[in-house]
Structure formats: C-alpha cells, structure tokens
Length: 309
Image 1 (cartoon, one colour):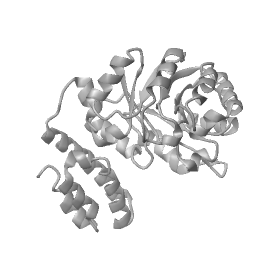
Image 2 (tube, rainbow, N blue to C red; image 1 turned 180 degrees about the vertical axis):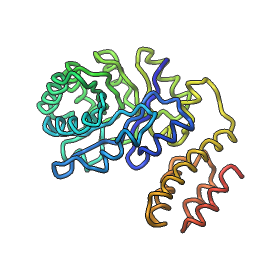
Image 3 (cartoon, helix red, strand yellow; image 1 turned 45 degrees about the vertical axis):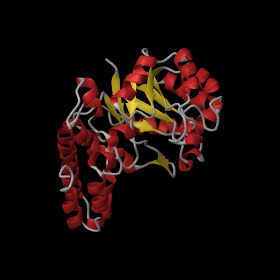
Image 4 (cartoon, rainbow, N blue to C red; image 1 turned 90 degrees about the vertical axis):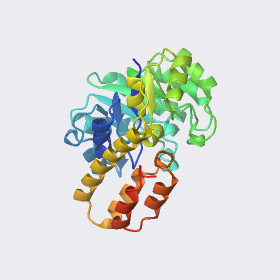
C-alpha cells in the first residue's frame, strides 16, 4: 500500500488542523509540521509549541526543519529531539526569498560544501531517522545531479521530490524528465510531491513510478480534505458527505480558535484562511459570502450557506 503524507503549509496545517483532520478524515500516514527555523540564533518558540507532543495527540507527526548550515542543523535537531521525536525532515525545497536569501530551503542545493557538512552530521546521529524534501534546484534542474550524489551518501528514511525548480515556485510544468533521473539513480526510497489534486493524479504517479514509497500532498488536501481517505478506502463520497465532513473539520477548528484567540478580528482572519483552497468544493456563493463577511456574526451567517445551494 502506498503511503499518503500530508505536506506542511505555513499558515494552514498547524497542530489543531492536523489533529482535527486526522479525527474527521484520516487516511494520512504522517503529517509534517511547517518548517521550524532559527530567528536571531534561537529556535522560534512558536514553532516548538506547534510540534509539542501534547498538541499533536494521536497523529504521526514528523517535524520539519529548515537550515543553511551544519550549525543550524545541529541546533534545531537538538531542540526537536529533546521533545522525544525520532524522525526529522529537512526542508531543501522552500522557494521563497525570505528563506533562500539566507541560504535555506532550495538555496542549500547550490552549496555543495554546506550540504556535505549536513550529510556528515546526519550520518553521525544514530537515534534519529532523517528525510529530505527537495526541489530540483534553485535556478536549474542541473543542480540536481551534484546534490543527489551527496544526498545518496546520507542515511535517510526517504527522499521527497517536488519536480520543479525553486524559481517556478508552484507554477509552470512539472519536470518529469529530471524526476525520471532521480527515480533511476536515487539510493533512497522516494516520495513524490507536486500537483496531486485528485485520485486520478495519484494513480497516474503510482502507475508511472511503481517503485516509489508514496505520495505527499499539500494543496490538494487543503482543497479536498477527504482525498487520502477516499484513495485508501477506494471510495467516492457524495457531495453532501464531503460537505458534512468539511463542516465537522471547520466547526472543531472554529471552536478551538474561539476559545484561545483574543479579539474578533484575529479570529475572523484565521477562519477566512481556512476556506482559501475550498472555493471549488463549497461553490461560488458561499465562498464569496465568507470572504466578504466583515465581522463574526456575518461570517457565521455565511458558513450556513455551505451545502445549502
């Protein structure tokens, strides 16, 4: 059975989302945390709170770190392992300038010496399983070949590949030719990531690459939270079943944030974010009403439209 993993998305897949999604839908082999990073030389406490075991009960969570050097790698690994985690994912795929300008994410693939130092550190740590999530390169897919030679030496649980370069971000064509090269030459189990929006997309990948370990899905699961459950159970939910489960997910998250957030404005902005990938699922009229709601009362009226059109 192929693994279905939930990719991390900053601002969306936090601890409460992961926990409730697992209860309502399930079907996920493991959830990844949005990347944990250093700020002014220190681990962000917000990131540590998000992965704290007590906030992630009954889910298989893999914390993800983003680094630019051996020093950052060791500091973040220590902080995460101190919470009891035995698996850590390393982000070498983030395409956003705020991180790549600091040599992190996909930019690390351009720095062979730093990459070699991190691989050496991975191989020196025996009580943690590491994985890497990477792009094909920062500016060119040619960067893949040199990076893969180094990564092949690492002791890795698996390698996750998003077959775009960082410059593309999430646009443009998937580079299947370079993914084919990695598929044929990588010495680690491979997880595929990128543009998985339906069951058909999942089957296309596993049919073309039968030896992959699994599929990592991010935006596709935010748009269709039921996607992994449907695939694993080989079923198709009705529209009413889908919307009912989406509302269960929403209501639990709304109740949580209502209890912990101070101020209506913050709550409203947070809950509007919940719907950003769900516009096609819920329809234009409810989505437009939700986005236009100026206060919580109007928001609560707007969400009643979900499933009623």
